Length: 140
Image 1 (cartoon, rainbow, N blue to C red):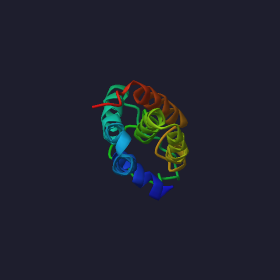
Image 2: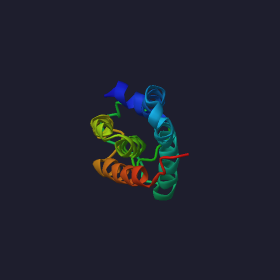
Image 3: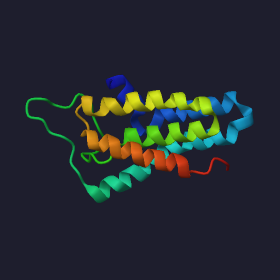
């Protein structure tokens, strides 16, 4: 879970997958680039929400978090937001992109396990991500 969480930091894994797909699938290159760029954009938008809500990360006495985070703000989960945004957008490009939801789910479920988020942070991040993935225009 730690390695998966680190891969999801700043949407890096999604950016990499999007770039790889843009290289491999020339017919949908522009849409895959949009998917790649959506990952860090979703992280930035997520941070704006974090600054508005200002919910602190969970603190469990005797159980320190198993992962690290760039801020002490918890709501919503940036990993869930970027993961579900890109998975949703990828599914719009190619129906087989729906397999990206398996990775999105794994990245998101790891956040409460690592002590980084409350479950509601992940749910809110996933909902925000799906909305972003549906709204983003897939052509440049």
